[in-house]
Every structure is written in C-alpha cells, then in structure tokens.
Amino acid sequence: MTLPKFLLPALAASLVIAACGETRTQRVATGALGGAIAGEVLADDPLTGAVVGGVGGAILR
Image 1 (cartoon, one colour):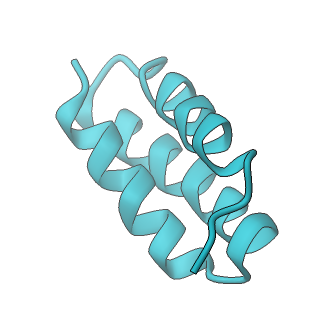
Image 2: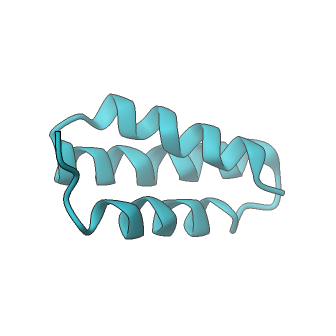
C-alpha cells in the first residue's frame, strides 16, 4: 500500500493543532477531531485517524 504524499503533513498538522490545548483532555479531543477529519479525507477511515490523532494529543505536552 502506498501512502499519499500529503498524508504525513496532514498528520503533522493534526498534532500541531492538538498541541494547542491547555489540558490533556483538550489535546486528546482536538487531536482526535483533527485525526478523524484527516483520516476521512485521506484514507476514508475516520476511526483510525481519530485514534492516531487522540494518541498524538495525549502524548504531547
């Protein structure tokens, strides 16, 4: 399976957006939302995108 060239920048953007929250819960929520949108647009799989974005938001400080 080949990944689209814009997948990595889209995931990086969701992590940057996730870093904007003041609390871990806010970062998880914004990361999951951004990941779900990116997952739907890029791979037609919002659930996986939400998981990746949420985890990314959880590990950022």
